[in-house]
Each structure stands twice: as C-alpha cells, then as structure tokens.
Length: 344
Image 1 (cartoon, rainbow, N blue to C red):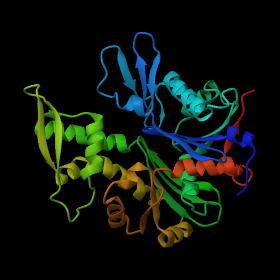
Image 2: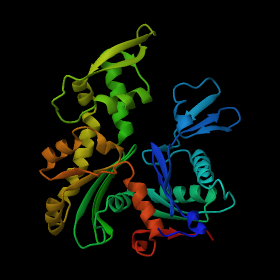
Image 3: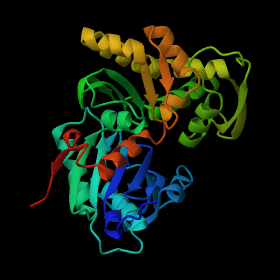
Image 4: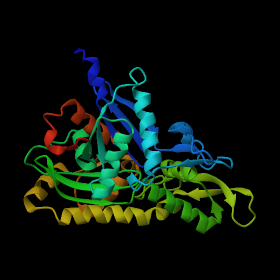
C-alpha cells in the first residue's frame, strides 16, 4: 500500500448537486455525502444546520426558521447560502487542518450559462479554495463508471440528477453531442405531489413524494403492478390529516410527463450523433447514472424507446464525484477535460 503525503489531502473534488453534495478528498476517496440543504434563522441569517440535519427540517420548521435548497436545476439559485454550505463542507472535511486552502475540482452541468459557470467558481473561492477548476458532469460521470472517454470511440451516458438530466456522446476526451435539460428527480417529485393533490385532494410534502418515488414508482409496466403505498398528508377540503392508498400504476402515470422529457432528450441526442459513433454506441449501449437511473424500469423503457442496449451503472449515485476525484488524483493524465481558472 502506497502512503500518500499529507499535503495531497488538500485537493478536493466536489459534486455540487441539486439534491446532494459529495466531496472526494485526494488519497482518501469519498469523505462526505450530504443533502444540499441549509437551515437558516430568518431574522439573523445565522446557519442553524447543514446537510442531513437540515433536510430533516424541511416542512417541519417553526416560524423564524427556514430550510432552503440553495441549488435549483443544477445551478446556484442562492449564491450566499451555497457559499456558506460549501464552506461548511470544506471545514468538515479539513477538521484537522482548518488553515489549509484546498484546490477544488467541481462538476457542473454541461448546459450552464457563462454567468452560472462563474458563479460556481466564485462560490468556491469565497468558501476558501485557492483555485477552482470545472469539469462537465457527463465527462465526470463517464470517467467515474470507467468508460474509455479518451479513445477514438463513441460512448453515450445519461446522467439523471436531482435538477438536471445530462445526455452526452463522448469521444477522444470531449463531448461530441450533448443535451442538458432541467428535468430531474425534483421534477418527478413535483409531478407526484401534483397528481396526489389532483386525484385525492391531498397535499403531501417533498420528502413524502421522494419516499413514494423510491418505494413504488416504476416507469415501465412490471409484474408487481398491484403494489400499493399508503400516503399521509393534509386533506385540502377538511384541513385534517388523512391517509390514502396509492396504486403503483397511478404513480407511474404521474411521472410520465417528466419521463417523456428525458426520453426525448435521449432520442434527440442519438438523432444528432455522427454515423461512425452511432455504430460504437450500438455495440456499447447507453449507460445510465445519477439517482434517477435507479427508477425501476427506466432501463427497459429507454431500451424500448431507442432500440439500444441500456445499462445502469453499478455506482450510479457516486459516478460524478468518482470521475471528478479521478481528475484530482490524475490531473496530468486528465488535464485536457478540465478548464482551469485561478484567481489573480
């Protein structure tokens, strides 16, 4: 076993996601995986909790306390809160060396604007980084699942996160064709909330919708179609708590609209694929990563819609941060996929 010098721990890879933030420390691997949520005192602006503790407060806070998600659709919606959250995570992972300013490599959606791009870098600098480097999420995910991104052959990856879905065809270390849509796990949750409200006059929260999605949601007909789930919420007519039984088929129908947006993005990207690379993708298939890849039946649905082989990555939830971490560990080898910028 090779012992790495202590200073290597200064370098960090961050998957700054809408739903979760993951941190990879050079030489140590993934050291933090926390929800991207911050609880604030509304009157003073003081941070009360970050991560898992803050997520447990969503929908349950008293007057004067707000639990916010500072990232929306894969980009920074609340700059100051994002900076404070990132600073907290940096300090958490550098408990023994609080004075060290790490070098950050941050994964971002491929479709973000230059302004959003600069906002991510500025948040990193304000959080205490000495340099901030950006990598696009599709390439990071492809590296994380072990695809041969630097070879002159086509690979296709679909990364479904909390706020965005990234579809990309990669060859020779770069993105040949890509599409980034602001549809992800959050949209699926919102669709479930709207369906329960419409069909049952019941208001449920984000956490309940997420749990329902994980428990019974399926995007392709399955053998256990008779599965049901009990859902608790507030009756919109009486205002009292009520429980309803929700069939799996109804949940599948609820998520159909955001699902169609994901399918359309995949089909559009394939339609724009150069003919030579299309043959490679036909051989290798499409790789699914991100939390959305774990939706039951998604691989079958995409296989049916595209006629292509579809595989779910084994490390679907961690692929982006693992790929970003590979850039931290081997920055000379993977330097061509990064865009570096150092504050002067």
